[in-house]
Length: 550
Image: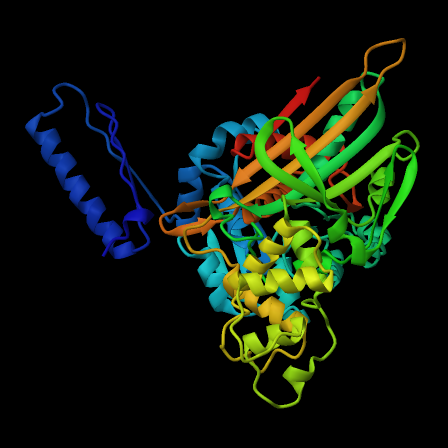
């Protein structure tokens, strides 16, 4: 049987030229004989009048991939994406779609190229089933199994592509980076650039490659928005007097339907620990330190002028002064502050839960002595309540007040509602894997404060700059805001967090494939050659920013 994709026939009227191509010599001969018979019959019957009928037959073999290349006319490229976690699919969808007609307009406008690339994406995971779930239904995407500790397999895959994306845990990036340096392949990650990655800068430059880190949301889009705003002000001789930045991954308002107004899309352990980290920032020229045990208590009410309906609060986010150096504003800005956003009331509730011992990490006697404990007996032990009596909200409120854990009746009521929501008053047995109060809290929060299949999350990123100008010009307030919601399509939910981390890291890979990033070594997206096209592409694909100046 003749394969349709391996031959074609074209006929030009009057001076007829027929081109026949096939991968089977016998079939090709049969077609030529039939065409010659037809031509001779037409010539004898005078179907062409006085025009002489000439047939020129060209016999050749065409490869299937050559035919495909001739049909689509696009350049080919490939990307290896290692790690099949929550943010992977938006990255794969973006890269696999850049050769489509839908992407043609922004591709040419944002990248200033005449031809699009078709990108083949290889998704590698320790468990191939995870990679297959990511690539399901995505053209140009292939799933493979990979153990990054298997150097031979890792090198084989890296050698086949133009750029590598690592979405592995941060501790694994150096393994991948070293192989990329050996094979002279660019690497992109969404993780913080730590000292181990920075140590690879010289080797990366020697290999003439780029290792682009912090190309996600926070870090990532926050860097790009900040540097765009700062550099635009400086181009007008502005001086940055104050820089404040706020970011939060939150439930959408409709999904914030529990007393904490918060939900977890992964294990709560990391989020709870982050709330116990110390913080440092500069406010009006003074350095402020916040101890980890006091972080929740330091939560302050926060409002975004352009989004007045959101009732928010912010918590200081680790060491803000690092960003003063990174953005080169440490010598001019009197205020440098980065905060984590939560809905109002979160800090007071979490601070009170910490005070009653719910986040304790020492082995708890009820949980390690071999006896079976229920959530109710565990809760009674925390509050010194009698185990035989029912435990309700009113009993908890009274006990919180008596023990001095909460002086505000409103906060005490919300803490009691939170404990009820977590089911800590129930007679259900505590899992044997829980050995500490922290384990119990994480287990209950993961179960009771998780997103349902139809609920959406929300990402909110907001920068504010106070800019002074010389020669008596009035000062300006610059604001930049990103608000993104999760979405569900065809039964599949894409979280706002996955979108705003996965798409930027994929854009980083695209910029390297198109050689738009010339700098080599270990980079962050704080230079115009990275953030200018990246922000343009993000806007073009629907991740919008609101910028205002007063």
